[in-house]
Every structure is written in C-alpha cells, then in structure tokens.
Length: 349
Image (cartoon, rainbow, N blue to C red; front, side):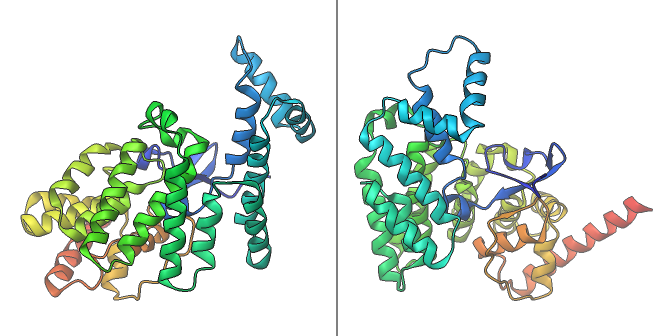
C-alpha cells in the first residue's frame, strides 16, 4: 500500500523535492524531531550490532545480508540471538523497542510502556522526555524532568565518540537522544523564560547543537532564527542565513530576514522588499492569516508540506515578530500581498 506521504528531516532543507517516487514529501517539524525518536532508530541499532563485526568485501554482500535479515523478522531475531552481544546491548534493544511502541501509543498504554522501558536502560533519555512532555503538570515538574534528561545525556555521553563524531552527531543512533534532550530543554527555556539568563542559555545550547550536527537534520536553525529575530540579534541572523543556502527560499528563513531588514533599513528598501516578496511567494498563507486577524492556534501537527497553511501556522507558532503587528507593519504586509496577487494575475493572463 502506497504511503500518503514521505516524512523527511531537514538535511536538504527547502531543496528537498516535493515528491519522492510520486509520493508527496512532508517535513517533520523541528519540535517533532526533538520530542520523538525516529521510526527506524531501533531497527538501525539492530543492523549496527549485526554488521559491525562483518568484513563485507562488496556492496552486493552488504545488500544480500540486509535483505536476508531486515526483510525477514525471523532471520533478524535468529541472527541477534546468535550474535556476540553484551547484556547491556540486549537490554538496549529491548529498551528501544519498548520506547518506540510507547511513542506510537497513547494514554495509559503509552505510560505503561514508558515505565516498563525504565527497567532496561540506565540512560532512558527519551523516556524522561516523554514523561516531561506528557505527565508533568507544572513548569517546575517539567523543568526538573528535562534537567534530569539533560544531566543523564551529558554524563553518559562517550567522550571519545563525541570527539570523533563532532559535527556529525545525528549520524549516530546513540547520540540522537542526547541531541533531543538538549534541544527540548533549550526550547523550554526560551518558551517559558523567566529571565534573560534563560534566554541566553537557550541560545547558546542551540548554537552548540548546530556544531554537533552541522547539517542540522532536526531543523534547530529555524527556532534559532526566530529567537535571534525576537532578540534583535540581526548580525547573527545574517550569518545563519548564509550558513544554510538550501533554505534561501524557505519561508521559515525568508519572513524573519524580511523583518530584519524592515527593522534595520526600512520597509521601502529594495532588500526588504525582495525578502518579503520571496517570502509571500513561498507561503502567502502567513500574510493572509495575519491580515485576517485570525487567532493563531497551537500547531499540533507533526509535519507539514512546503507552501501549505500548516507550514504557515507552524511558523507563526515559533515566530513572535509577526504576531499582533502595528499599523505600519500591516500596511507593509498588505502592499506585499497585493503585489503578489497582481503578479499572479499578470502571469495567468
């Protein structure tokens, strides 16, 4: 059965094709990336355990082995039973399987699975993140649970592997929970900030995450861009924009960059107008939502397609500069939207 959509991470940014083999592509939101383990992480760990001691001579040998094990659960389980695995590695596989089931479940079943997973791991980072996001009732409880997840992530991080994989953390299944914990905590600090110190800590953490994973599979750059804009760190916005050229047509970059120039050189400057025109062209829904004076609901979706209204709602959830604009800004947006409509009308005539 053909899937409804292919959900991808942010490795290739807005240059990711709209379809893969005829199936529409949707981006996983940065928040979903930081809150939820990827579906194949348990399976990839099983494959890693089975292949690390193999001395494959050709690509055909690798493909034959993977076809024999991956496509047949019986063969996979048999190979794992016969493999020379440490007890903690077998426990880790049990933990990953249980936590994957938990994140795919709801309510009491999910809670039971999360609690069960704690029996199999001394670094249950994703279990703690689930508890923080689903069971914590107060900001204090959330803070403490996220702090615990980050503490365990930092204490249990293999320093030798860290140094060897610097810049490529996301390539290691082992390091992904560490990345999720740091990102979730940083986002919490900014979203629930009680002091400028919390905001600075959030920014510093996200900046470090971009050094840990230079290609930024999670999409941390979009949260950081919005925070920079909110804090008026305009020089950092420019640097971040130049660092990720694959997102130069992405509304999650274009709208903040338009706002940056609106604030620094004015609404009529050609650079300001260019950024805003490209932003509206990429996703006009952002402007229509603002101009219609709609209440912006919390976006609960886990993914969105390019140029969609869901993308617009997600952007307005993470960017505060376009919420409740003043009259001057409304006029700026209205003119840009009218220019967009005029260009479309000319193009169709």
